[in-house]
Image (tube, rainbow, N blue to C red; front, side, top):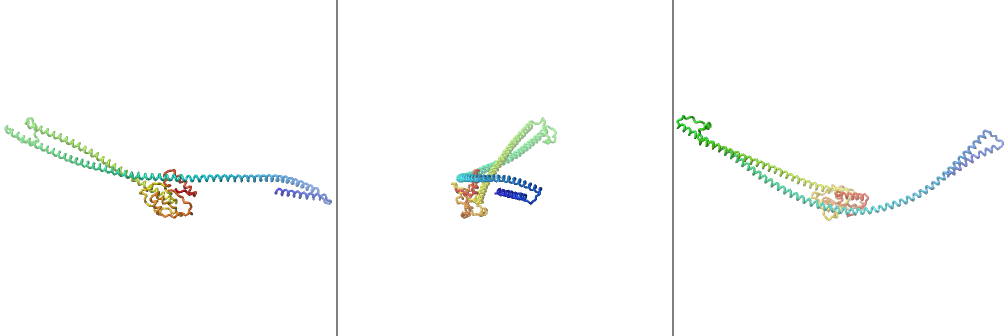
Length: 433
């Protein structure tokens, strides 16, 4: 349409340009009108330029017509291509939607299969953990009983040894005191005997001096002053009996000295022996006391480990129950035939104020789950009355009470934990056990 308008414009322009030319020509032919030669040439040149412009415009018009036809053909091709592309896109969209629908159906089937497998695995793990827990509790009780018996036996044995060693030490100390007294008595007796022998010897020497003076008087010799017995010299002309008696006394003194030395040596040996035995007994007593101390430390360490294990179990149970309460999830019923027996240290109930408060409707805990929960968790669940869940709260997600314990016991339930979180986010209700 634009090309036709331009063509009509150019035609109109050509006709309008031709009209003055014809009018000028007619004016030239009219008689009585005088046109100068310069004016005529100017008009002729103008006419030639206008004709040239008209030719150029016609050529441009033909060019624009050809371009318009080419663009119209290209527009038709583009419309056909767009229709073809749209049809192909619809086919591909339908194919993709069918493929995705099939994949969704396969994923739903796989999800159901995984849920069934998870229930079986959870039930197996629950039974296995319950059995292991019962076995550990029995082993713990047996170990505690055995430890008490062993400690009592060791303590009694050590006490008997200590008493025996104390009695031996006391008896040896008494023997040592008796030997000391005997030594003192022997020393006193020896001194008394030596003193008696010396006195007897002096008496005999005095008697011999008296006999000597009597003999000198008989021989009419001047009586000299009686010498002191200590200044008596052993002269060769002494009587034989005096010399014999003196030798006998010397031998007796030597014999008594030898006997005293022998007795002292025996006493020293016995004393060293008693001291060595006492030292051995003291070392044995110290060793037994150290052994008793080690046994007592071992007992305290075992008691501490047992208390720590009980406290850790109690803290784990409380943390699991608090996590389950904080998440607002129900506990799955446990199909284990073995009842759960909590440890004595985990029998304290949890205050209801310690539990986190939710704005939405609280979820119920089945009464059959209290057998698998710890004692304090079961009391908390039984003491807090739970109203029935309304349909407006959405689907109720059911979890097992052994789910938390299974997640911390082995790496396999970590996958099931992630699956449950995925199902929870997707709003899919997991089947009850």
